Image (cartoon, rainbow, N blue to C red; front, top):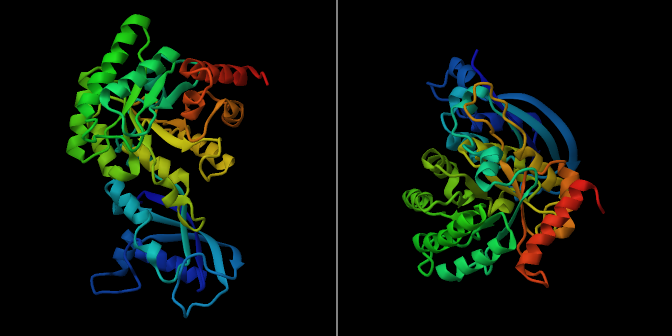
Length: 399
């Protein structure tokens, strides 16, 4: 019997919910609503998606998304569980297309949201997956038994390579563990990656020779695939220990290609994530998103922060981080660690250390703070020190 993969959706429709679910299954596989001679019953049995269950949740009076004017309510919301033979897909991009393709535009649906994804081990084992994960990140950064305290170079954009290196020097002197480029800073003409790497790594390598600690810097290499691979090689040659990409800009294929080439951890920024999830009846939850990104090879993954800069509720942010830390449990895995290190950012300060630790019950995370370091009244060193002290207190149970 063929192995199958499973997905759970919440849908909204003004029509018969069972038929809407069947139409979804057809649109995501053999399209039985439009028969042709070659589309035999045997073909449908072998390659068609199955509706595993339909559970009605509630009725609402108004549609979430625009639908044809002749479609009147009430609008039924239901949990729909579908499955497909794994032979229907051969890659992560095709998995994404199957899960969130044309069915998101079906006129019979006024809402469709992917909530959960389950994949067979045989498929996951053939994906790149994280090469470094938490253990590799800790080994390269030299930080154990506590979070990596990190920050973002400020101003976000506009600094020259030498100015970026000066900011990095001040942060290193302040005791930071991790520094990253902003998602908007990659390879602009005033700060080409090659020049920025040269200046910043000169500072980092000299500090490592002096102090015995090598700060991890995530250089943003988001670009065309060929350019990303070249930028990666420049960083690796200079002694760098991390690259960063904007996941939604390069796509799963770009990430997987980089992962197969990379000898460095991949720091994944999810810029644009809100577009995929902010509408409660469209897009997807974080569980399927992070699973696909991890399968493509990301080692660190942003989950937002509890400081309230962005829209997500604290409980959702913590759940996202727990999803990143959920092992794939592949018995034949060649990797020590297939988890992704969650990255808390976005308004994180000393005030969020304790609730973050209370919600996570682990220190396996990167805690990045921009204003919490740069805005400290006593300077960068005090900003870095205060964050470490806040986490020490949180772990020790000190108010």
